[in-house]
Structures are given as structure tokens and as C-alpha cells.
Length: 193
Image (cartoon, rainbow, N blue to C red; front, top):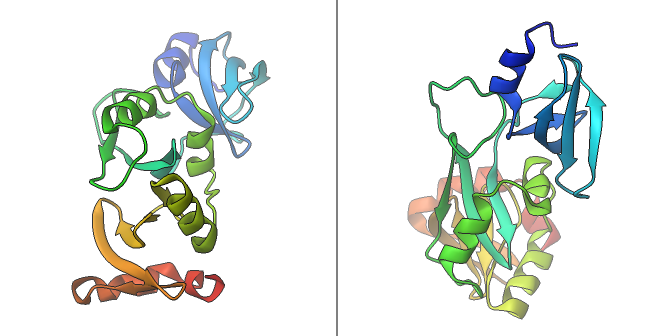
């Protein structure tokens, strides 16, 4: 039980993406102060779930979302609306000027629906490693994220958020001089490449 009125629960969570027990779910209906009808973003299965403050959380951060062998960068906007989950009103997606097999408009329109398995991967921090991301990007002439903040394109260019910051050379990320400080954010990615 969430200890608030059904109207308040509806305003905070209906038609938004939340994390329930660590899994990304889209709230399609508020049934009562204890039950929500949700669709699991990964499986697209709909179910009625009992929720409590212990298992219902707002997603922490979006970052890169892999869509159609391209990427889009998502972030939550701070707005004065009563929403705990991610919704069309409080999320912004930015299109990168990087290689993409689909039009940027198609990728952006799909991203804004907030109703797809790839968003679950981003929210649950599931990304391919650098080696796999580079192989997929080259195979599909696109761009693939290997971290919430980093992506690689088919030319081997490395992207940080929406900026091109380096290149993959012999399986390792080499940053441009102006972005050398970003190497501390990558951790052990280069060791696996």
C-alpha cells in the first residue's frame, strides 16, 4: 500500500515508467492504493502488481538507449509536475550527429513512446561491452552504446553523451586531447576490448 489517495497515485505514476523490484515497468492503470496494472518493458507482458514504497522506485538515470542499431541520449528534465516516474512531459531525448541506419526522426519518435524493451536495458544498465558494440556498429553501419554515457560508431568514433570525444584504436579508446579527463569514467572497458 502506498498510503496516499488513488487520485494522487494516478497523478504520480499513471502512464509513466517506474522501477518495480528493479525491473522497468510502464504503468497503464492505477487500480487501487495497493495495485497497479503495469506492462514489463522487456517482455511486454501486462500484469496487476501489488506495490509498496519498498518496491516502487523512480528510475535514476536514462543515458544512452540503443535503438535500431543507433543511439539516442535520454535525460529527465526537472519540471514542476507531480510525477515520480518517467513520462513524455519530463523526459528529453537528444539525437546525436552520428551514423544511423534509420532516420533520426524515426529513432526520436520511437524513443518518445517510452514503451520498448531497449529502454529497460538502459534503465537496468544492460549494455554490450566495447568490443561487441563496435562489431555491431560496423555490421549495421550505425552507433551502439556500451555504457550509459559512452557509445561507439561504425567509424570507431567514441561518443560521450552527445559529443564525439575520441576513437577506438587497436581495441582501446583513445580520447581527444580536450577529452582526456574522461578516461577515468571508462574504468576497465579498455581492458576487455
